[in-house]
Length: 606
Image 1 (tube, rainbow, N blue to C red):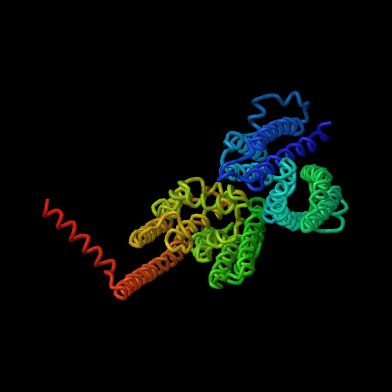
Image 2: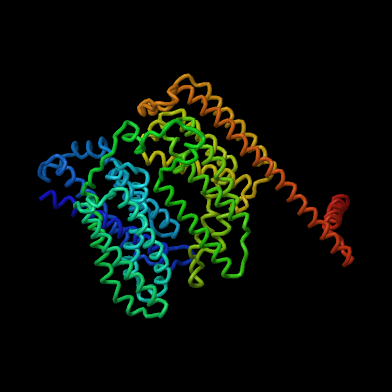
């Protein structure tokens, strides 16, 4: 009985999660707002009800899962000590605890502003994907690809299935407004679902015999359902072009049924172990999900590749959106500098090399390579991304408001750029503290060793390095519009401070007499570079050498920007003087001097 209830309860839990995400997406993205405020309070109440249902289904699944694992009746699972032990002492239980806390936080957030809806949506996505990091893919030989592809697969499916459900909750007039936008979102989601589904299947079903297993049969069923849904989507787009909305709305009910079945089949698949594969087990594979590579040489590091599915997927989406933005501008007849596109592409390539490429592979096994990957992510790649001006491109191409009262996606993005949190984050002192100050928190506490133990930890570090670098270099040399204008003299002071702090950090690493990895590299039992302390000192030296050069380049770029701005200001003053001379009027300087003379004369007369 429990064997049946386990996949059913998991399917119900995931379904309520997908519906909650869909309603949040509808409230913030499909429904029209009123100057940034949520207009559909009835839908907001439905979101809260669905979130509450999600929490209940999580609790039910946890109780059933405990009974299944301990082979006991469900009634025996109502033991607070056992529940607490499962949620705090097992890796799978911790992931469901994260999910439970995440959904509870979203439930407490008031959904009155569109921006709060976006924040809630991000937290809900983190919650629904948290257990995936403990799925069967964690034992796969293609660990990074399997986990990352599954995470993006679930997010895309949530947007597709949940968004369609949310569409049905709108009034007829709102449906007509929201349908074109949802159709575009559904197309992107469908493509993502197909690609990530294929990647996931490839990591687990690599032979004809494996497709004949129970796991393979369920996968085939899921593929059939996905293709059916894609057919529905194709009909939607055709009927939108013909403005045949009644036919679309009649089709939606059947599509939702198939989507719900697809979600349950996916939940069933996640409870079935994939076919066993003959993999040579090793300590390195068990810890990192990657076989121990040979000793690092130039060619080995250059040619090695093991896809980090989550980071790779995000990079592909970023590139696709960037290209779409450029295409939109070209269709309008506007131009976009080729140099910016090249800079962005180089920045993205550096991120891929430092996460999935050879540098990313070896960063799991040696501190020196980890530090080199850190420099690529935090120092080199951000410069290319910042010079690619993605914010400017987004401001010029994001969807506009659909009526005179709506702020819309572009308006919400502008409001976010000018919000108080953005104003605080772009303060050069804060950007510096995050960029350099966080290094001491990460590397001189047990946090580094703990994060190195799992895929989620690696992803967190990579994301932090990249975002911290983008924030710092955007503040210093960014070409995108920013919430505050930082004087060039302040920028130069911040750059010198960054160089000093980074040098001090690197020297501290080189001077350390003990390992800072909390025993992580010892567990790998690598046959090369066996002197771990020497490798750690080498990492500090690499950090010093590679860290100073990009900052020095930023210093030169700041001087050039300062000179260019002074030249523009001088040109503006000269043009104003020429106009004044041509019209017989005083220029700005003469007017200002006359104003000062008047003030002085008034003081004398008084």
